[in-house]
Image (tube, rainbow, N blue to C red; front, side):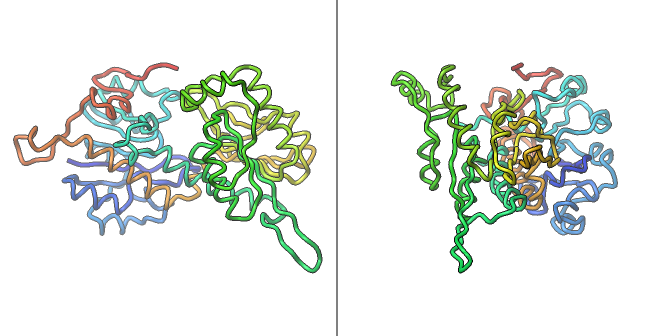
Length: 383
């Protein structure tokens, strides 16, 4: 049984779904692997490395699709490639399911499509398949380096004979995986870091990394609700949201660097920084909008572009930071995919023959959550 690897068809994507090391792991499981020629080149994985690992090289995506039972990809397949799919094939990748306009086509073709972003992140056995965490971790690190490159001053404090250089003030908005890594990286570079999140429970994590929590007063009832739900299911009051906006506005007015990380699957990114706040920021300050590709946290940000406001604030629309670290991002993503693929393999007790067999089980808590099309139907719940 063959697993195929398709090359990214957009200039802004340098990652590859399966690396040579992952090929070796898949072959040990009993799979053969065929990869489109040049698919790993942008991540510094030449065709020769895949061949040495035991993969076959195909000249085109069409050839890969024709040969493969399972097709792996980083982003959604191009429309032309989907047209070549046949019933019973499996597609695995970050398919952006809530924005994907091709799910009906997958279903019509009889393809089972798994969107890796939908992984239930609370399952302990699913942690090694969590593509959002593996990619966000690297993105949070790189975002700080991007900011350091754009910023016209150093991050750490310097004591020199010519005077003292003050440390940069960095504000992180959103402290999930990417935000926490951004805090840790900015602290390592010597910056003073403040952070905010709608989840009050994130305070302990921020402070454990040396960051200062931007505290927003809340009622005893709100505090209890936030604590009992772990923060994730908590819906803040209108007053709390208003108070938090005021705290953030003040912090950003004094900030040198701002990094925003907030994204919501299936919806546009929440607007965290408005024009009125941008107007108060210092000339030369830098904002890295990690959600630029899904609508943007910062008013006026443009995906994959850097713009400068009238008052000299630089806004970097960082739409795909993991692609900037393509080699390492691909390694982690490929490991995530291999770990998921192992859940598709039928146990030996279910397989009468010695050949490798798959077992698709929509009752399985992982497969069922990730499958957006199966049995010629779209299974994705609308948001």
